[in-house]
Image (cartoon, rainbow, N blue to C red; front, top):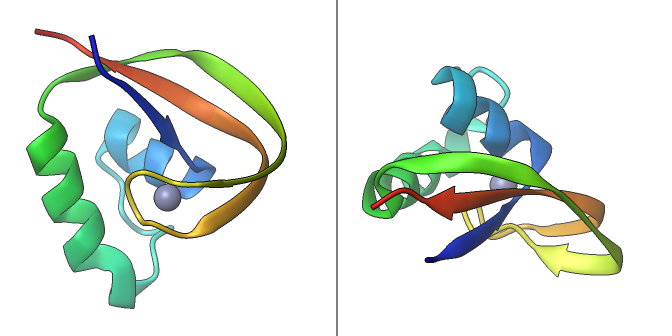
Length: 72
Ligand SMILES: [Zn+2]
């Protein structure tokens, strides 16, 4: 099973297919990454206590991530 750590704005895209919170400059990357991830399910949150990189948009984030797991 693959786990993805995802920032809050990318999580909204994953859960609600709502990309209005994503910077237009990042939209191509975000859309392509989510397509490549396939079907995922929200598996909770994880506190990194520091910086981490969103696996969807690739931006550095601080604090808590949303964790998604592949459903396959
Ligand atoms: Zn992100």
